[in-house]
Image 1 (cartoon, rainbow, N blue to C red):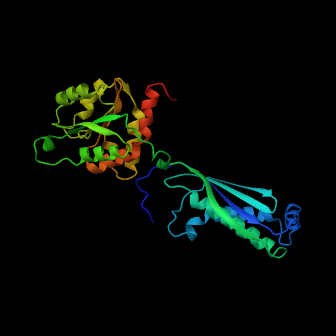
Image 2 (cartoon, rainbow, N blue to C red; image 1 turned 180 degrees about the horizontal axis):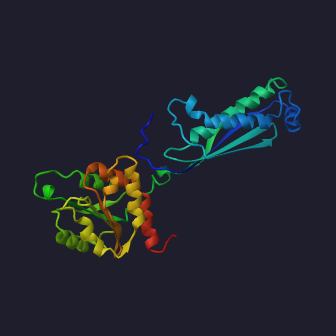
Image 3 (cartoon, helix red, strand yellow; image 1 turned 135 degrees about the vertical axis):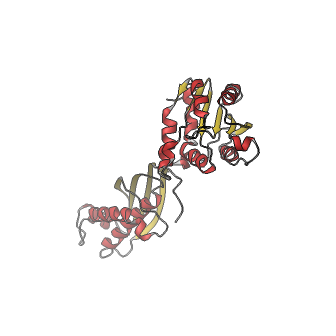
Length: 302
């Protein structure tokens, strides 16, 4: 199965359709008048469709088991065709496209089975996905070339050359996925005064996004929050609450991070952990949805 552990729970919706075509108008009349020998076609098929949605992961090997929060099934007849629509909702890490299509296919097969005693020409014509939404796929194609970034690594050992930076470079690479160029990349020692000066220097029109990595823990030399916090003009607590919640689901020490976030002028400043894995978790938790802040900050959206 595909690894979805790096994804976040979001509302995901899928709508699928299947079409069943009968061979004579009398079949449609019998369905509508509930005269099919095996019973009420639409109600039997609806029950089967609900089971089909719920049991998808039992039958499709690579589908993840997931909570089904809502399923709606509707029918429309058009001439000799019965159009089946299945809508499925979940709040989870992966979508419900297959669940919706599986439900539609089970409904179509149930209708076929119930109609075959009176109509030997019934056909299942197609099963298709009409719509899906939710998760990062909605934002995957969105690029932000108008945003420019600065990435600053705070680490005594990296500054002195004892260790190599991997976290800052990981941030730069991940930002590139959204079309964001990093104009400035620097390495600083864990010194509050130096970090504060650099934050003020880089916060301006040239950089819309400023990310510090390192110095957010609890060791005596971890001073990045102390250096940045007095400079923040508009603190955004929800950003790091989200990042810590995401991290806590994956490792037990994420709650110890003292990362902060907010605006210095028009520049969004984020402070990330120093480890490469911590940086990657924060990026997965926050991007690209965090970039909506720039529209809100300019009064373009609410």
